[in-house]
Image 1 (spheres, helix red, strand yellow):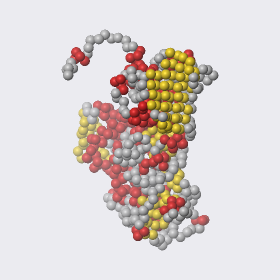
Image 2 (cartoon, rainbow, N blue to C red):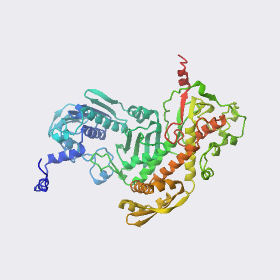
Image 3 (cartoon, rainbow, N blue to C red):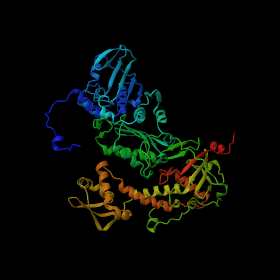
Image 4 (spheres, rainbow, N blue to C red):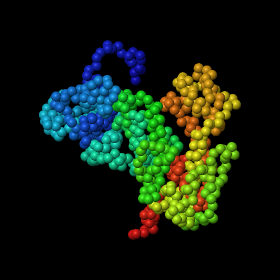
Length: 631
């Protein structure tokens, strides 16, 4: 093999102007990566043309042939030649329109780029006129319906080197399908038909956004999701987020749209991920389909060749808006309507929002019951409401027992909710005003589960998981409402940081002090950590420099850091887990009812601190089916 030298790498050539064909082929390298890129550009053009029906047909994974037909406004005959030229478009005409672009396409490069690497033919007809086609620069009469039909054959045959990098026909067809599904989610008013090698793959009629979501999202998402619709000045976020129980191992079901455009943006995705930090653990990935509407002047979509990334003028504010909106939706406890027996979302007093929507119940789980392990709870003599909250033993140090509620007994709840649903029926006049959707406790089974009865049927509650979540939320609230105690380091930690991290430290001194980190610069690239939150002294001693660097990186990228909160919550989660009622603890009816009432008033009570469900609903119909009643 010939050795590469400086002379061979830099041949002496004169600067020359590139040909239009080569310019288009270079541009195609950015716009047209694979057949799915062609499908995306052509379908977006169809939507910009006002089409309410789009048909996509491919052969050979889109490598052999792609045909995209729509019923949009069409292209007049005198504009067909311009339509396939580079930098010719009807969507923007000046800088102001470019800075506030609302169409999916705007550069005028798609058709020219596609034509430079394939055989392309465009047939278009405007209402009230005849159809015309253009191929290889020649315009001729044609036949066709109102709208545009674009045929792309032998993709990359003009650039064989690019064709070698394509995958199998099945893989390329799957990428085309993914692109169509992404666009279809954002435009439910448009009907889509996708046919691959003569086989219909997608057939979506025009519908509501809810129906489109049901058709395209995975079943586990459809069965366990929350709807949200939050508005703020110049911002609106609506869509659906999955419950932690429907999390996936891969991030393959995450859809985020900005003004109708699918994007992959680390600031937006980080805001969503932050909202799940308290209910989703490990490598599990949330599923969501979210739509962000904002002023087009405040978002720049012209920062990526394929327009898959955006840059926002105030990304930190948008990040916080998304975080709080999704966190609020997840904090709502899904409960059962006592009148209808249907699952519904209920706004909690601590989590106000502008809009809410119904969410379907999680898939029921058929229980396996060992008759010998069932122990009906024995009702005790009537006691006062305060006595109903028995003190569950806690292994915590005494310093924390006096500061935070570690038991249901220590939690203040409306006493009217505690005396209801005892073994002895009460007159209607004494019924509590507040609904009790989880019903009344009737017993315990396997030393782990509370059995309750409501109007829909039977409720099974994991008493340890439920009590753990109750205590955890109370501990967090207690810490948030008071000043965090600080502790000075016996020997300050001195460590190095990058120039970017040092600059972030200088800009965010006050925010770092609010997090409980007393830092000072002791060199051009060195920081000294002198004081930390008392609760986190052990974690800081073990990995203080790493935690501080993580906090600084978060501030630089997102304007806020959750690293300290996450570390604090790890400690509080362990405290709650140790203090929660243990398995095989026999509870009284009053104690079980106390747990149920607290669940109804606690944020995120549907899942424990580790993301597992705390309760399931079994309807009367499902119970009948276990015994084949009615058959």
